[in-house]
Length: 124
Image (cartoon, rainbow, N blue to C red; front, side, top):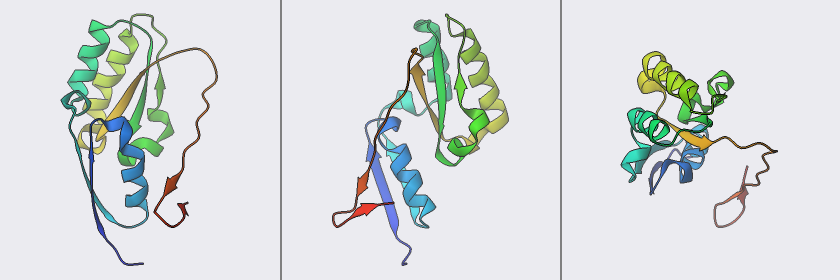
């Protein structure tokens, strides 16, 4: 397979992270731009939790997303534990963690379906 260069542009990290990672795993060179500044800054996540106290979960993006111990489901109703974990990630993982998704924690079962189509066939 011929190695290709890909540039992904997105309004926020949640829309592009998984696709960019998959293309990278297939051996291509990948760069991506995220327009939403709030999705580009580990400190913005801490600020958001402090301004909007609630239980949250953290899902890392990029190469470290497969390190399952980094997925964190918060327990504190004010999000204090999530703030502590985000600070620890910044110190321990630095540039290796290119971003994360910060989601409100809700009780229930997560169900998702996703597929990528290259114009001719579905990509595995």
